[in-house]
Amino acid sequence: MYIGENVKLTNPYGEILSGVLTEVLSDSYDDVRLENGKVEYWSKKKKQYVPIKEKHKNSIFFEVQTDMGFEYILKEDIVKL
Image (cartoon, rainbow, N blue to C red):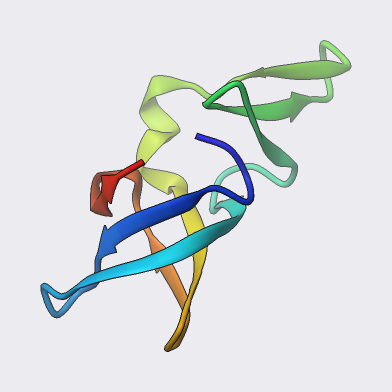
């Protein structure tokens, strides 16, 4: 999975939509990125990007641009990569 990739997703109404993955965001971390299909955050302590912690996986969400606008979804909402 990477930024700019076409994805299919299920929105909160159960509809399947197509869109383009535009950004990865987090409620727990300030600076996150998608690298080789894995979400990483900037560690101030280590001064490098490191994989997100298991306990914070539910705070990660993705911005997908569809024909209807932007959808903010969890990884589980992505149907097809």
